Structure formats: C-alpha cells, structure tokens
Length: 466
Image 1 (cartoon, rainbow, N blue to C red):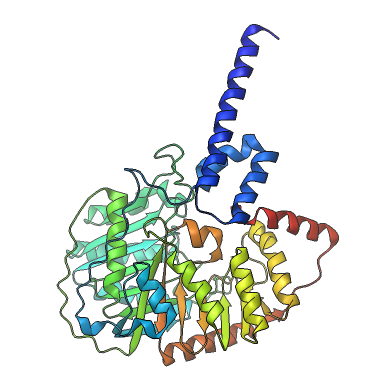
Image 2: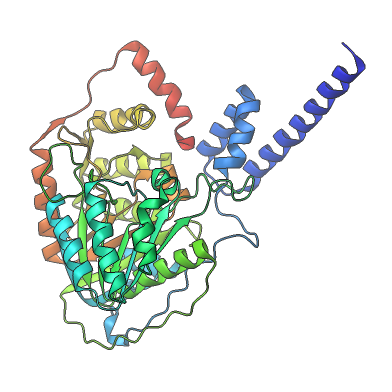
C-alpha cells in the first residue's frame, strides 16, 4: 500500500469514526423509545457505512435551529362560549389542552364523507362557492383527470379574483414538482403553488423524513374538507372506480375551522418564507351540534400530544377501541396498551388492509398483529381496494379521523392533523362505516411459512426505522 493510499484510508476511518460517534451520541441524547434506540444501534453496528448517513437523513426528530419550522401559533377568534366548559370532564380533552392544543369547540357542523365521488363533488362545489379564498394543502398531487378538473376550477376562481393557494409536499408530489408546467394557467391567473421543503435544501436536515402529510382544503377560511384523501384519481373522482382507494373525507363548518387555518398559515409561511399576519374577522354565530377538537402533530408542535392522547384513550377504554389504519407498525407502548385493553374485556378491533401498498410495512406489522390476534383482538383484514382511511372510535365518547397512521413515521416524524369529534351522530355514522368494511374482510392472521416468519421477525427489529 502506498503512502497516499494509507493516508486516504486513515482519513476515511477517522471521519467514519467521528460520524459514528456523533450518531451514537445523538441517539442517546434524543428522547426516543428504548426499542427505537436499540434498533438504530444495531443497524449502526452491523451496517455503519449505510446506517450512519441514513440516520442523519431520516432518523432525527424534532430539532432546534434557526431553520426549524416555528411552532403553530393558534390565534383564537372564538368567543368564550365556543369552547367546551369543562375539559377536566374527560381525560382526552385535558391531556390535549395541557399539551398546548386548542380546546374543543362547540357549534360545529360536521359531515362524514365515505364516498370517493361525493368527496370529489363536494370539493368542486366548495371551490365554486368560494368568494374570498381557497387554501389547499396535500401530500400527494398527481396530474390526472381528477386534478385536471380541479386545476381548471381553481384557475377559474383565480381569474375571478379569489385568492388561490396550493401547497404540495415535495416528496409526495414529486412528479408534479418536475412537471410544473401543469400549473402554468393557474399561476398566470394569479394562483400560487408552493412545495413543502426541497429534499436537498440543507444537508443532514432530515427534510426527506419530516414531510407534510396533512390534508387541509379551506374555503373562505370558514369551511373545510379534510381527512385522508390526497388529490389524485386514486382517491376521488367523478365516477366510481373499483381501483379507487377506500378512504374518508369530512366537511367542517364552525369555530374549529380557524384552527385549521392557523395550521395552514404556518405551513404556507414556512414553505414560501412569506410572512403575513393572520386576520380573522368572522363574527358568525355557529349553531352546529358537534364538539370538535383539531389536533396537529409533528415538528411544529412542541410535544407528542397526539401520541399521548391515543395511549390514554386505549388505557382508559371501558367498552371498545375500534381502529382503522392502512399501516400498523406501533411501538411497544401502544401494543401493550392494546393488550391490556383486551385483557380488561374491552372490544378491541383492528381493521387494516390485507395487503397494503408498502411491502416493508406489511412485513413489519405482522408480528404485532399476530400477537394481538393470539390474545383475542379482532384483527380484521379488509379485502377490497387499498384501505387508506385513518379513524378510531373509543367507547361511546367520540372518535378520531384524519391523516395519521399508526406507525413511527406518522406519530413522531411527519406533519399530521386529526380531528377528535364528540357527538352521537358522528359515532353512529363512523360505526356504520366500519361495520360495512368488516363485511368485505377476513378475520385473523394466517400462519406464516418459516421463511416469512423469519423475515417478519427481522423486520420487527427494524420496525421503528420504517
């Protein structure tokens, strides 16, 4: 070996050692579960040259720096009467408010939308109805027949003088990012299109992992569509399609919409670097019958309020916990909470697709689902189109619907938003929809082959990294 080769090898080893030491130190310093910590440590030990760069790209959670997205500033224009009077009456409300989440509000109109075509029709109706502003944020935007109609409708409103803003996540909408000529007419009409954080904006800033997974469709800052549906023909359209994903959308009108606007405003300001003061002038007296609480999660929320609330809801359940999620790769705390609920005699149901669109997630989830199946949890495998909805019913108190999956990425990394709804009407409608799902499903987990079981157990070790 020549002197040059020796020096080069020596420098590489030194740099590698420094990076490994830095990564390990950061893992130990960051607040994360023991399972996640061990998974990263094992991966670094066995595959250091792959895992260390990967950790700096996707492994770091909430960070503090001058480039960090500011925490959401919830401006509250509601009157005192909009709020529920006694948050201590239910631990869910109390936990959320003590974690800085705006309190639940009264007077909301809430309509659950379970049809792809109804969601599409309602969105176009609200666009046409808008007089002042249209603010839309989504993870996935694909140019197809559905979004062509959407862009045409938005362009028409922009030409009429309505403020139109479209915020797309760069990773989820990568195809749209590289074909922005599709937005030319909208932009020429005065509409704005922005992408949430370029991947290579700054090295090692984890922008690949901290994605904006929120779905927020605001009209005149007064009416909202949200849920799990992205903007593409796979989620909604003019006609029914057997290949369309099974998903949920909901319509909201009431004081809770202001919280969604605060979230969108913060996301837009961060993506565009254009600061504008929020201005709420709505003085409408809301007369809806639903109590609603808007719960965002992600790096712009200081604590893990949503995760804590879900654990609390499971631990305190007395009657039932019905869960619908496309991806189920929980941590040990959540699995243990579900096990305890089942042992208490709570009706625990987990409804998830028999096969999702992510093989690694399916492999990672299987050991957890088998464990729950073995103790008597109803593991329901939906056999229709891809099930993409995210919803939970807890007892007869209320439920949750929104964008969050029950996996590490959604609960601790991505920007998400869900809505907790406390009303009998919501409970009945959500229960009916879940029961209908179970009619097209199989029960329980099949015994895997030895090879599959081995692969699943390996993936379980690395599940916190998925």
